[in-house]
Length: 355
Image (tube, rainbow, N blue to C red; front, side):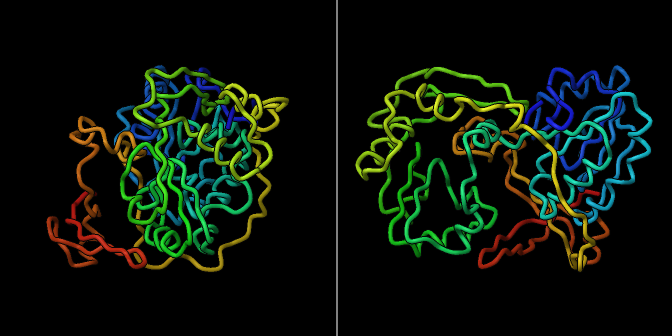
């Protein structure tokens, strides 16, 4: 999502904002460079306000914060209206946690209703590029898993680690008649894939990114692909040609980029505006609400396999963090093992105290 009133906020102008409300973001882990700009802005007097379910330390002055259960976030956004309305240059930024929230559309609409600039802290390096190229097409990932297909083609995806419900994803893959995995790493694909084709990581192929503010950036391969690995677009082109599918007649990645971007009005596609009819929720969630994030060095296949990164504090084994009130309610103490379940999957974690 990119740049203008409803087209987000250019990164270079972040430091000029007078007041900012950040909703649902582990800012230092999700967006370290933007976090640094926000820290510099706060030191010069910008007011930073936070609405989140985690009270982590951003290492910057915070004017106000509300830490609430995830289900309460959509209803708390309007409480910041007066704070933002008194600012000359105010904005709302929606982070990863807000974008992945079950009520993401409700959060988006409530943030828009505040009547100030609205921006998104992009989830991944090229999520905007995928959007510009036309993704998603047809069914979303949840539908592809809920209604298993006869065949799947996985591109740089490790469902056991990348999907929100890995057990359901693996079950769908194992029911399929044919699964093709295109990856730079063997991983666990050998357990469910009928064919595995080696592709080059981004560092071994030229290509393009579209940044979170809508800036097109191209790059060249740093080294040649290893062994028989090839850039993914080349493998897809050959597969399309072998199957007689139209639209695969590309000779270079520049032609692929031109096909994706030619004649497209970036500004028109970067609208952050949402049309959403607000309706009260029928029922409020009951029971314990789990706050889940993807640690910075678990985010993709490359960082997961980087020995140096896996030795850092951010890559330590997960624990079941909870505050003292919840610990007392559940009758557990710090250090005791607890069983965490999702569908048919389960993990035994050590309970850890964090108020």
